[in-house]
Structure formats: structure tokens, C-alpha cells
Amino acid sequence: MANSKYEYVKSFEQPDLLIPNTWIVVRIDGRGFHKFSNKYAFEKPNDRRALDLMNAAAMAVMNELPDIVIAYGISDEYSFVFHKTCALFERRSSKLVTTIVSTFTAYYVHLWSTHFPDLPLTAPLPSFDGRAVQYPSVQNLRDYMSWRQVDCHINNLYNTTFWALIQNGGFDAKSAEKELAGSLSADKNEILFSRFKINYNNEPEIYKKGSVVFRDYEMVEPGAAPEIIDEDSAKTTEQAALSKTQEEKDKKRRAKARITVQHVDIIKDEFWERRPWLLSNKPGKIPKEP
Ligand code: DGT
Ligand code: MG
Ligand code: MG
Picture (cartoon, rainbow, N blue to C red):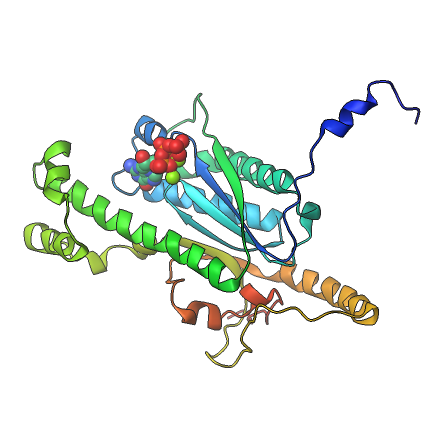
């Protein structure tokens, strides 16, 4: 093709490759969902339909992007994790982020009517922002995931108590806020139990723990799988060729795996030890149909 005199403008495009060998987390977040949740009268503090819709959109994203190893969602946000060896889109940051954001948004809108059959979606339509963050070690990645789950717990305990004071205690927003200022977790648990007979432990797991989405394989006994260490072994050309065919096999197995949403603790070691495929990126055994 002949070069046109305009072609030089291409040189203005800046590369935005994420550095190799790091865990990539793409976190998306609903734009102005405070207003959006009021418009559709989301139940307070948690609207099960809204969370199920977020989870359904996240599952669709995982289905379309097999390179994502795990995703974690709370409120109007979702974090998608790519394995540190991921080579998708040559690790171009804007391509990874915009693909996830647009795929998620498209499914959120597409699946809206399944989850809110009586509330037609009208403009302004929901949209999401996104960013990519890189974590150099498994410890950093797990601390990131733990940070989000702790946030889920802290926010949910606060919101549950805040809305109990308003809905069952006759407080207005200002006085409920004042009542909770400086309170510790134990104080909120006590308020819930003594004043409203609510045992926080019995609240639904989806509200307390958030939602974890991943490919499901047979779980292993804790301690049975080799520990994932952050080191790399230099590969010979032969090994690299061998791993190409292995990669194809892994790809097929990954496609067969069922994608699941669970509301479980991801802070403790047990979650990761029993599911070694998450950090090793080697698919496990497909469980037999019951
Ligand atoms: P942003 O993200 O800066 O554009 O602004 P927002 O308004 O999206 O703020 P953000 O993301 O910090 O907080 C999420 C908002 O979404 C928060 O106001 C509560 C609302 N929200 C999320 N899930 C639910 C729900 O299940 N029920 C209700 N009532 N509100 C929810
Ligand atoms: Mg938001
Ligand atoms: Mg948010």
C-alpha cells in the first residue's frame, strides 16, 4: 500500500504495554451508581437483583476472555485478574481495559431485563470506568484481593447497621450517621442484635463476602499441591515448543470448565491452596457430572 502524506500521524500513538511477568488486575466501577441505584429504587443496603446482574455480566466477560483467571465483585465494581504470564493483546493496557469495560457494559445492558423484568432501562444508560494495576508478586495480588474483600465486609456491616437504624429504628440519615460515628465492628454487631434482633453472622454470604468468579475444577486437599513461588525458570527452545502443545491442551480443558460464582473467603490460604489452578494457570481436573 502506498504511503499517504497523512500517515506520519500514526507516530503520535504511544505504546502502553504493561510490563511482563506481573499480575494484571483490571478494576471496573459503575459511573454515578449512587444516582443510578436511586433511579431504579435499588433495595438498601443491598439489592440482590443488581448484584446478580453484575455477576452475570462478569461471568459473560470471563466466558469471552479465557485469559482471566479470577474475578471479584462488590457493589458496583468488579476486579478481573490476568495471570502474570498472560500475553493477550501483547499486554497493551488500553486494549485490555477497554475490552473488559465494553464487554461488561454490553452484557450489563443486555441482561438488565432478565434481572429487572418490570423496570425498563432508559437513558442515561449505565456505564463503567476501568483501570489496570500491576502486581509483581502473588503476595501483592492476594493482598489486593483481601483488600477488596475487607472493604466489602466493612462497608456491608456499616450499611446494614445504618439502614437498620433508619428502616427499623426510626432514625433519619443524619442521626443514624451520628449514632455510628467512631463505632467499632463489635458496637455495630451489638446494635444490630440488641436493638433489631439481627445476627450479622446470619446475613446472606453474598452481602458479607462479595462474589468470586472462577473456572471450577476438582478441588485438591490442602497441602497436596506444590506451593506457587514467584520465581521463573529460564526455558530452552525445546521446552518452549513442548509447552506450545501443552498450551493448546490447556486451552481446550479451560473451555470445558464450568464458570462458577461463589461467596467465599478469599483472604485465608485455604481458598488458594484448594484451587491451585488459579495461581498456577494450569487447568485442573474437570469434576464428573453428579
Ligand atoms: P463514581 O463511581 O465515582 O462514578 O460514583 P458512584 O456513585 O458510582 O460511587 P461509588 O462507586 O463509590 O459507590 C457505589 C454506589 O452504588 C453507592 O452509592 C451505592 C450504590 N449501590 C451499589 N450497589 C447497591 C445496592 O445493591 N443497593 C443500593 N441501594 N445501592 C447500591
Ligand atoms: Mg461507582
Ligand atoms: Mg464503587
